[in-house]
Length: 160
Length: 211
Image 1: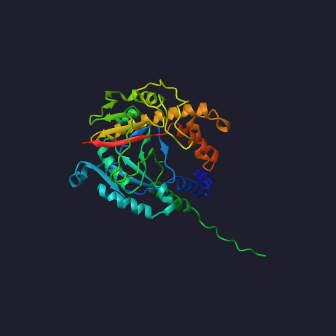
Image 2: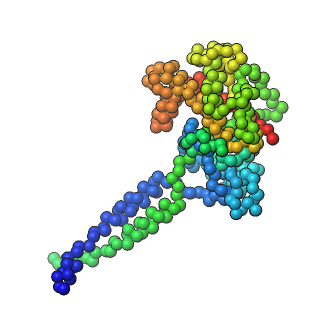
Image 3: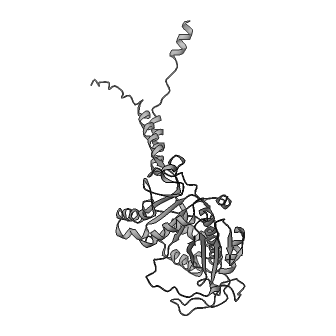
């Protein structure tokens, strides 16, 4: 009996002093490589179209995003089933875009404003009409740089 | 000297704290890089503005209907043929280009096209007009834009490889862009890219969609 008891006593504790260091390393990695999630999607997460000729958007702080897509199935009674535009945290109409862009521009220095880009994240199934309305609004307030957000991939997935 | 033995601080829960922070950052942040097809919109035309008259042969007209079918110059076409058709149109070089700061318009001496009379005069005069329907799907629209951009990229790649001399000789346009992404302040490189872009300027216009 005493034999077993002795054996148990002899096991050294695993040294976990370095564990915090490892976890902190992971933590810093994620802090550096990621950006804060800014908006919660109210519309159904748009399925972005695929493209091959894509350009990376630089300077994330200079990008304002407009989401276009259908409302979530549970909200369709409230918002209807057409294409919806989401600005910041609410579903808006085309007429709100000017104010949205102005409020985004106010956050930046005047000399940065010409470099501000509007990224349109739209679902593949949306109509070009909605996109065109957005374009007209942006043109009217002279926010001319836009980017149609896409993923890199096969074009065939765009048309179903 | 008798030294007092300091008790060791228990750091066992440090890992827990760090894990908590780690999980917080994992949940609240995203890693996706936003990429897309960038486009510069045309400025709002002043009132009573008469658009300049453009010769029909310098316009490539693309129509998309609500069933996602495509007409190019009034003939139905598949997406896969669009790129080559666009290249042939842009690269035709049948006439004299637009006058620029270096003097009057010249013939396109770098075009490889068929020099047909009924196609574009010069890459800097060639306009692509995309007219879609309000009901055309966004996916179809992006696909068409992508093919048009692919045509421009191919022509620019070819131009850059053949006609750029000096430090950047033999590089494609894609390579040049990649270089400039890492070296933003390089004026010589910027000038080269500007020259390549100027050889095949992107003129894509979006017409008012049909209802």
